[in-house]
Amino acid sequence: MDPTARKIVHLDMDAFYAAVEQRDRPELRGVPVVVGGSPQSRGVVCTASYEARKFGVRSAMPCSQAVRLCPQAVFLAPRFDAYKEVSRELHRIFSDYTDRIEPLSLDEAYLDVTENKPGFAHATPIAREIRSRIRSELHLTGSAGVSYCKFLAKVASDMNKPDGLTVIRPDQARGVIDRLPVGSFFGVGPVTERKLREAGIATGADVHRSGEAKLTLLLGRMGAFLWRLSDGRDDREVESDRERKSVGAEDTFAHDETDLASLVEFLSVLASRVVERQERAGVRGRTVTVKVKFGDFHQVTRSRTFLQPIVDANTLVQVARELLADTQAGELPVRLLGIQVSQFGVEEAGEEGIWEQLELPLGMPLDLAPHRPGF
Ligand code: TTP
Ligand code: MG
Image 1: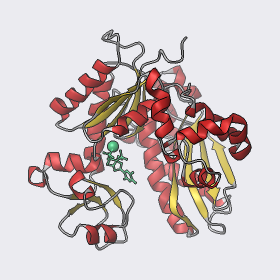
Image 2: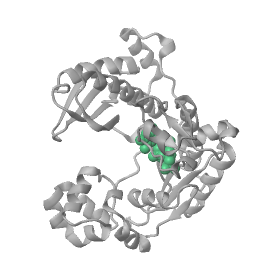
Image 3: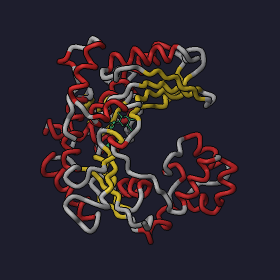
Image 4: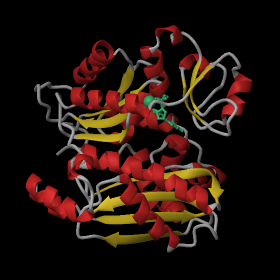
């Protein structure tokens, strides 16, 4: 199939947590809102409404800095249950168009609508319809990008935020990519960005001009991948949760972390994300893997496989703690921490009855058994 014949939509909600708060509390509309830690705490900003962004408030910024920039902002603690509910509703809308949905976070997903349920010939009217349903049914706004690959669909959705719809056609791709800063390329984090910039490569045009061989020399396989992106080629598939072989969550710390207690605490955050993704995908993994990347970028993984699937966050945290203890975390600074579950094997039999039997030996009360939400 012609690689430019695919139809991919990337949808990203605008100022997500803050927008939900403003929707649910009309007195906050038009007001700078910051969702995150309390202004007195050492916490960070999850997100800021566009009114607060005008003052320079951004995600991941310390709250103390946000107060200084925008003292009149209303600070709110996040209400994750409300955001999850919106996320479920979003996926209900998406699934009217395709089952090939790859969620990236609660508010962001790729949709492959090359073949779509209503039989639209083009992706743009689908993106338009989804955006208008988000507005009328959820009373929120999202930005959409439409293109023939994931890389450009995501670039597009970011081009006219908030409340935008942007299409990048194959013949426009190179023009758009040439002007992109390298930091906007998929997979380029701060370290790769610095390496590229030190080599005099600052834009997509520079990446392309450097050629595949030079980039491979500089960055290995990642370099070759980036060069292909700069050439407008990205054949990564939209992977729905059901097609996945594993479900995971990982995060890079703002500063390398040496405190073991903080790392363990962070495992709980990751575990709840993994359990949520697992439930949403209707899969249950028997293998738990902990991934640790250290400050010097060397990475280790530790895994354990069980007879029964791991279904609740507490069990997952317990296992992950033991696996973490088997690494040098706490002795060496940790840059990134991740948890993954895999081996959905038994689940694929798809027999609900077997689950109940398998859960009992784990000692888990049946009323805690995860439900299987529709999406
Ligand atoms: P984003 O989609 O990155 O941001 P956003 O939806 O708030 O704003 P926009 O897309 O319009 O730029 O993230 C989605 C949600 O994820 C965000 O509302 C809050 C949460 N989040 C954090 O908690 N910490 C972070 O560092 C980031 C980037 C997001
Ligand atoms: Mg968003």
